Image 1 (tube, chains in turn green, purple):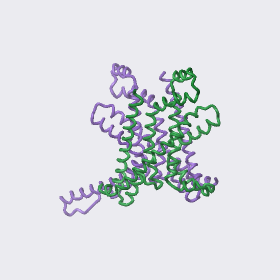
Image 2 (cartoon, each protein chain N blue to C red):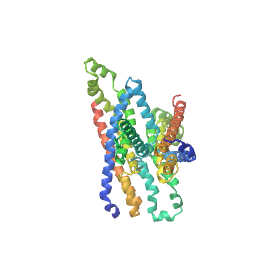
Image 3 (tube, rainbow over the protein chains, first blue to last red):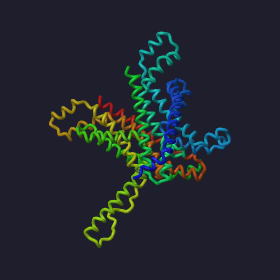
Image 4 (cartoon, rainbow over the protein chains, first blue to last red):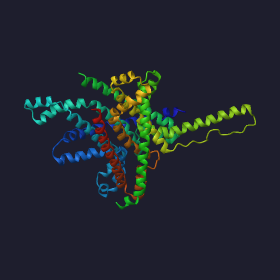
Amino acid sequence: MDFSIIINEYQFYLEGIWTTFWLVSFSLLLGLLIAIPAGILHSSEKWWIKGPIWLYMYFFRGTPLLIQLFIIYYGAAQFELLRESWLWEYFQEAWFCALLAFTLNTGAYTAEIVRGVIGNMPKGELEAAKAYGMSAWQILRRITLPNSLRRALPAYSNEVIFMIHGSAIAGVVTIVDITGAARVVNARYYAPFEAYLAAGLLYMCLTFSVIYIFRQWEKRYLES
Amino acid sequence: MHELLNYQGILFAGAWLTLQVALLSLLLALTLGLLGALAKLSHSTCLKGIATLYTTIIRGIPDLILMLLIFFGGQMLINDLSYNLNEWLNQFVTRFDPAHEWYSFLPDYIDISPYFAGIMTIGFIFGAYMAETFRGAYLSVEKGQLEAATAYGMSKYKIFVRVMFPQMMRHALPGIGNNWLVLLKTTSLVSIIGLQDMVKIAGDASGSTQQPFTFYFAVALIFLLFTSISTTFLKWAERKYTIKTR
């Protein structure tokens, strides 16, 4: 076993950490922008609002992330219309496809979390807000969202870790994230054990830092 | 669309392989999970330490990395080990018998099949999650029941089989169900280490027909069918077993 390879090729791993970091952060952020409205509107009584949201969540939570990535990355080329439009410039790029797949995936899972916590809102608080004469929008903004997003923290921390682990498949479609870096190093030196072990350790550091940060947040927002 | 019909046969063969891998890894995961939970709840510090290390490592490393590590790295490690053992055994024999000719006591090259590596890795990963589920279920069984069983003079083994296990499984059912759904989706990763599951077949087919969307979408629908059947079954099972507890 020769770990000097990893030290010599550290710049690949450094690049990989950075790529994983921004890919996951952006997907989570954009996913949250989808998830909050989707989670709220899921309980709408109009079928033409509820139907598409239900279908979106059902599809993206019921199929593997790898397949979703492949459908977007490889599948996009099948459509003549898309290939001739300006969008094709983006769909050709692996990073864009990965970002899109990850965003849609985490959006669906997070929407389910949002739906759950909003459904469990304490009834008394909502009644009190109504008694104060707040409008539906005011209740949502002042009472429901702050309260339920706080309660969503533990479930959301799981989703973030799931996303960090899920992002490892970006390495399969030529992106040099942490997994991609390990693949490059393995291809150069044929040292699979060292290359993937290093990647595993890096992911482990990332995961446990995130767990630590969320635990601090939970202490601050949930236990007071 | 008719391209899909041409590949119908092997696509279903791939789906069957996916299901096989998923079910066999589930079996391994349940076994490892039960052992892990028992180790975590035992009084031995050593066993507790091993189980905690196991669940911590698994939760920190992505499944794909573990799979690649076991498939490529594990293969190399085993072959190195086998080679070194061979050398050592030969040297040992030569010391007593100078006329000894080199002989491979252990196989020269051990090939880990992707099928085996896939099942091992997925089973190993979900064993850790199952261990957490079982531990929680174990703790939620009433203490009084165990005391009553002890008072009846049952042995430790009997208490586990007759009192603990049936009640524990009832509490563990929702957790097992969730783990199964995640496991099923993780199975798609075995295509990366070269197993001819439906993801790999869809990849090959889309290469030769130039219709990647059609094939990957078909695979997505098959996965959706599997998860839908699973959720329906799990809902039914949960309803059935909660009635009995009340």
